[in-house]
Image: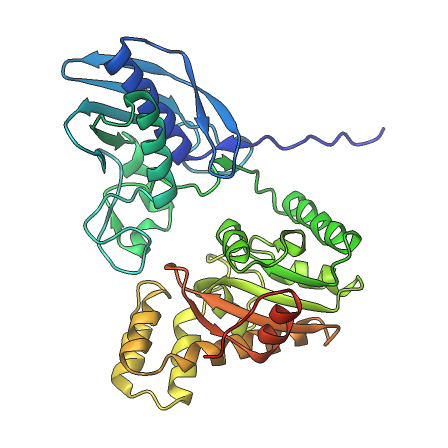
Length: 370
């Protein structure tokens, strides 16, 4: 009997939950309507309908609650309740964290120290949905809470990153796609075949959605941009099986620094040598011991941008880009040319190598001289 293949079910992010809960609470507060579901706009376009678990009215605020559904993804937040408490106030829409939402205590993240760990895209989603109900002139205070958040925070990366007291409100696309590793790897490969079919022999490999956005900003052809997730090695190997002539690796420095160390599956819990790799390349450029110690004690790789810039050592990133390209080319037995571009969370390109210049220019990226 032929083995049946179950299609893995997608879910939605904590950011989408928070936006939906906030919208439902605002509708109850402003319009007196208790809804069973709401439509939420996704960052990449389109809408998703989210069921509302409950709405509570307690003058002068209302609360909306959504139960997180991660689909078939092994997500520790699956089944948890995300609550948004909304009250009216003059001026802007203020978004903050309540019970079970962590607070950022260390630098290097996309949220400033001292603020609730609600990432930028979820903040935008929450504000957009609340604004849709309030209209252009209304103001509100929105408090996002996850009552069980503190109890599961230790199962996430938050303690290591200096986020205390709960989980983070995450999501860059609004949708959680199942992460069965083998299935996910297979789902990524058709991107390569599609790009080749459209006439692209020079490809851009990037770990995720932020890289896709960056590629668009650089006017790189969207049909040539391939998402790899953490499986950069797998995708390089798949490129090597096909008539690919060149690969431009484009990503946040925290991911691509790993390639310079020969780490091609970039999931953090499997392997990590970012601090050591950055520190070693800084030492090769003559960095003093004090700088090496700062690099070895970073909370995130992003902090290296400030540390190296302060000590006139920004060339480290160019060397890291060249090293990543060299390791990647060796990984596929020199089947094609490789170039690497690293950027910071701000979007600033911090380093690229000659291979990136050549491939990027061939793809239409007008790289200015450093």
